Length: 120
View 1 (cartoon, rainbow, N blue to C red):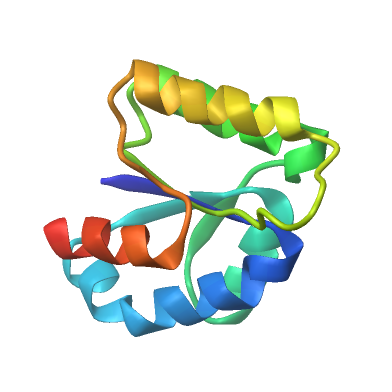
View 2: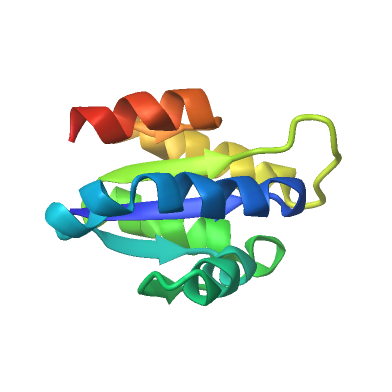
């Protein structure tokens, strides 16, 4: 199973913490992680194996959306920062729309991500 992990700058530490709290599930289920560039760097430093794509503003959100559309990515955990403006907002909405179109689970906060991870 492939899971995409994405986190806005103000949420990257929260993503690393979330993954650390669920390391056992990710290891047991042999989850393959993909990510946008900067999130991937932070997650790799925490000891996770992850395939990074471009940074979100440089097209990483679009790359992950393409994997969702191709049926390669099965879940997206995207810790968004709703209190900040993001120049690549159209890409973010496109990724969310693609998840809806292809019926791929999408969590935009840790509480929802927790439920999705428990469902694996």
